[in-house]
Image 1 (tube, rainbow, N blue to C red):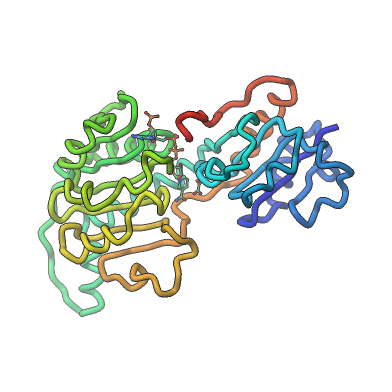
Image 2 (cartoon, rainbow, N blue to C red; image 1 turned 45 degrees about the horizontal axis):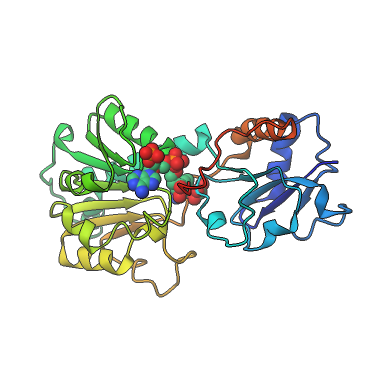
Length: 318
Ligand code: NDP
Ligand code: OXD
């Protein structure tokens, strides 16, 4: 007996069930797809559940299912799961790698980079003041973009920025070999990477090593009037340090999609900050129709006793 439990408050479970039905035709998902916590009535025993489809499950909930063969995350970042002290570490944890998720993130990064590069943060303000002037424009071929995190998302964003002929560098744990992208890796090379970066993009996973990585020290290593784009996790940024750097003018402007506390509290200084453009954690969104085939294939693999693809490396935490 096998069954799927869906645990997420962020999305409509029917979108996921409807996408999975054609992708996994051998399963009876009208019977064997249960939505936590209110749709569990048809299940006799939690021991029947072998697959958990999750997004930010509440701490402790995964422990209730003793026979899980895989926890499949419905997003790329698994930080909320690995932060749960009770998370069953012996169960394979799969993260989302999906072309639509990747594409949407690259769209977001391109949009924000171009916004700052072409000075729309200033032109939009000028419009409000009826100010018709042309500002000096930096040359694309000389504009230095730096991406923290060169995985699925950082790598794709880098490729798109290279296609527009920006000068692109990436920082990761291991060295990368991407056409047109200068690779920096490891903690030792972070200051040199930051020193050459005018527009900083964060696409790191949130781990103990990367928490608070954008702080007064690293911001201070960026050149004066640099820009910061954070589309990864709020925990990467020490928010008070970023606010201080914006207020001092060392950082010219920031685009923030993610925050320490989400939803962003009503009294957050970021809402009305003149140098901040923000969005409600929508840089990229999971698309059930696009990711259903890969999820179904992983379900098949674990049910056959094979390891799933896109496994999270437990020691690395991402
Ligand atoms: P990947 O696991 O594919 O890539 C992570 C990258 O970060 C790798 O290049 C890795 O290096 C690098 N990295 C990890 N730890 C370190 C470290 N300590 N020092 C240097 N580099 C490090 O992740 P994805 O690209 O799929 O996703 C990245 C993050 O984006 C997610 O974890 C999630 O938090 C966020 N995200 C945000 C979304 C949003 O809507 N705002 C949507 C989707 C994702 P190496 O290659 O050497 O291993
Ligand atoms: C993700 C996200 O990690 O949407 O996929 O934040």
